[in-house]
Length: 48
Image (cartoon, rainbow, N blue to C red; front, side, top):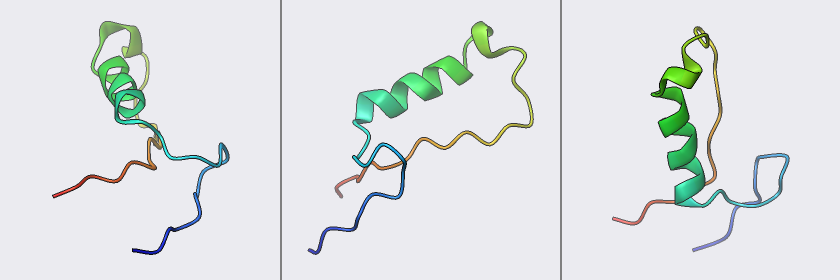
């Protein structure tokens, strides 16, 4: 399988725990004032 160049500004794939941290934050009370925002957390490939 050919590698695709990263599409993010950090030029690396996110680790699964990094994406999980974003999801956990958005589901927490600390993100109570965030609404209507598009937050990109990408770069992870899932294996089937």
